[in-house]
Length: 537
Image (cartoon, rainbow, N blue to C red; front, side, top):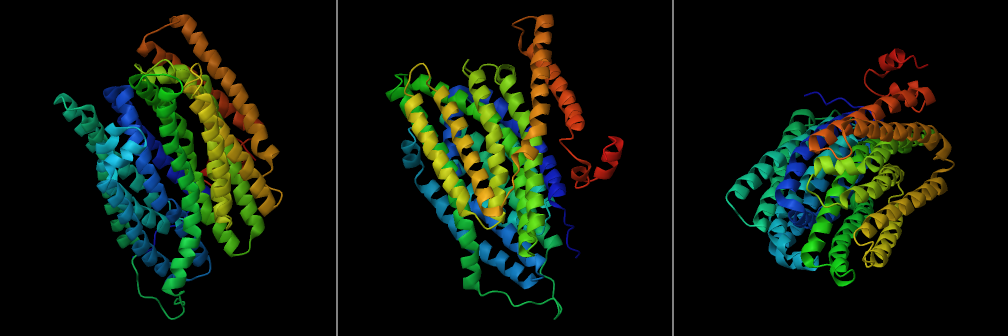
């Protein structure tokens, strides 16, 4: 059987992004009606359970795909097929055990975990999520293996399969149980169980794909290399994976602490009743879901850039690694800035259209978190660059410092009754701005002059500023025509017009300012034809 084709890093990112667009559409089909069915308080329970799961998921899986893709890309660049096979087999065994332990902790102690975050109603949801950690460990191994071969197709397809079954099973079951009149905790557990079913179906697809495209065919004497011992391979894998997992776990732990702090401080320090605190945390969670969208899309670049930069480092092509990294950061700015500004300037109608019955604080929360999303996007890609260059410990330091900033600001701001839940959004913005500044410092310190912030941010900032003015102007113009307080349908029309105007203006400005070059377009499928069509030289 022929091995699947590779892609360059931007081509791979396009494939992953296409998959993520489908995922986000399916996710909207899942989370929007789910938020409306469960209400602000139910969504708070759902989010609390998911944050517990995220800690275990991140600890056990975050470093696996990055470490494997980096090691396999380097081994592939140096023509070591036997070493590639050993990396995969060792990873399967090691991370099966890690995933099993984490799943058992969630399965056996859901009540205790829920009590720790002051959300006892989340216990059943935590229990329903417990098998997912083991399944996701195996998913991470298979995805890292194929990403190391610079093949992003199976990752993209498996993610779509995962979300599709999550939607079909989770949303379908919660609707049935709602009609049956089941309690809110039971309905939340039913909704979140779709994550487990989706993980199982996604893993089945990846196992089949590897069997069809990457089977262990016999090698000729010329192709055969002598792999490292199993012990050395385990050590190499863990030395890279553990710091990455710790760095990612810091953010997961911060989210968990955030849940505990917001719920606790709103009641103990700000003086709100538990029911009010649950509603405020629920609407904060809804705003967080939207704020995470840009980073989810940008993560495709981070995933794709790791094997590309790692392979260039393995071949001692340092200038090529720098060029690839700076291109990735510039593309990130071009994509992240308009998404962040769009979320901020159109925050109120976005929240009202998607979550009509959400508390009034939602618009202001999303405005603040929209600004934070830009820094989160840049951090996502810079973390990938540092990891690909063998500096995986530095993002951990940046994440810890950012986490301390968030926790301290939460403690100060949420306790102020007039600030309350807004303090969590402000602290998130400050957290990721701090991490972003530190990552820029680390990249410059370790790898030389890049990233050149003027080349990366200058032109996209101009384009985004014009776009933001166009979006606000279009929305206000529609509001004058249709009325100042339209219903949900009219607000949707106004929002659609504003988004369309923003997209058109930004597209024109990107071409005019040359934020995207012809060389960039050549890295994507049909890019040369697109460049000619746009008359870009």
